Amino acid sequence: MQETFTIAQLQEIILNHKKAGKTIGFVPTMGALHAGHISLINKARAENNFVVCSIFINPTQFNDQNDLIKYPRTPELDKQLLLNAGCDILFSPTVNEMYPVKDERIFDLGGLDKVMEGVYRPGHFNGVVQIVLKLFDAVKPNRAYFGKKDFQQLAIIKYITKQLNLPIQIIPCETIREEDGLAMSSRNIRLNSVERNQAIQLSKALFFVKENAPHLSVKELKQKVNEMLSCYDLIKTEYFEIADSETLQPVDTVTPDKTVACIAAYVGNVRLIDNISL
Image 1 (cartoon, rainbow, N blue to C red):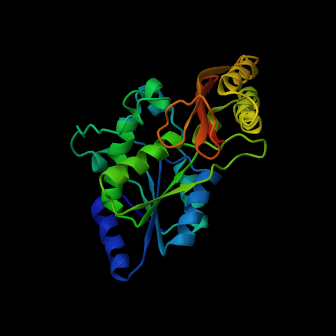
Image 2 (cartoon, rainbow, N blue to C red):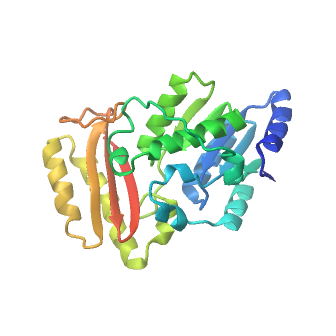
């Protein structure tokens, strides 16, 4: 596996492979890799001739600078995991490499950024789109791989890719969970043992919703989830929403395969998100 730190060197390497007719699969990450990320690498490996992974903690998507400072960093472990997974290039740019000048672009995201995460993290998705487009321009992949755990982010990336008519196929990948159901997240390593034990209630609540969606109303489902989570002193729910899978707008009725249940909550001081398709 090669590691490169500059866009120019990255593009030189990729160009040679493209000239040889190879397809490029791309997995953008912020590091602190886990089995969920590696599942994206594995899928990219299976569907392409050449796999690029980026590790870049993007400052423009953090509306809370304290969260940026605390974001977990495990560079040596990340490299070993990528090497073992058969990644071809690790792109590890600096902030100055990706933002030589301040990015002033403001994107119209069709209202997808105005609900759920957008309410609690204003500006977050604009920052996500800034860096994803910069990375797409640097890598110019045939396919890019994103986990469904960040469901709203995935919807926004699919939207902006279509709006800009980019020749990149966005590949959604299933959420990978721990044995007890907790969605894998880089932030999980910040949970202490007591918080970790309570964190599984988020996925339990989502599994309850999926099981009971056929015979409970949306109002009843929301009430049940609030009751379930209010029993745990370390869990502070920011939102629980049942929404249309494409528009992300709240719905009053569950339509099978077209509805998603999304949750965000603090467990102690660690903010976690999760979702499940209904």
